[in-house]
Length: 249
Image: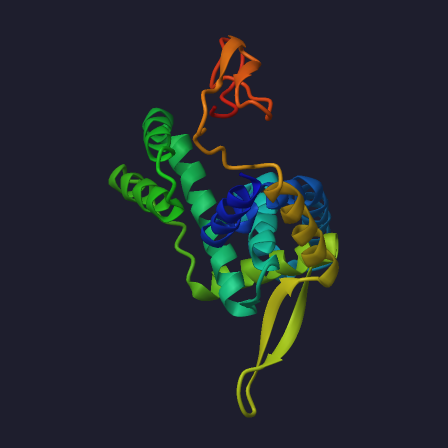
């Protein structure tokens, strides 16, 4: 049962974002506060006149909200840790996520009831691209305008957040890799420490999710919500009145 559970867990890793898995969620929880503090201090510096050329970026982060921006920045960083991604692609993707967040906040502010209804409906889908597409479609139909950022603006916002994330956490780093003759490219990837931490967490998690197989003999009768089913492995019922679903017998 444990071996099959490990196989299922590894398959889930292949088709899921790192930030949607338990180790990635834990890393998000441990680091997002540091990123938030770094962004807040950076905005203060811009407002004080130390980096006025970034005033437009600071305004964008204010519109997005520091907490939302730090979460999106760290989520993108966690997703990049298990592999590597070109810096330009990463920054534009992150800048797009910030733009989306601002537009959805404006949609929610202008039409709270419609936004709530649509958001609840699309939440049932496990496809992030589908959820984003539908929200934008309804937002535009209701007359809420686009932020209007071009690729250069998204690149600037995403690059700034990438740099602040590196500085705040030390969990991701920039590396230069050869991509053919006389061709080098900058990539973002997790540090060795971060990758080892994620790997150890995955090893621990995969052992916690055995795949319970059908029994070849008659199971123990259920005498309580916590006693019955397998002969040698303690089980719990699928559901009790004050308990969330746990395991199948």
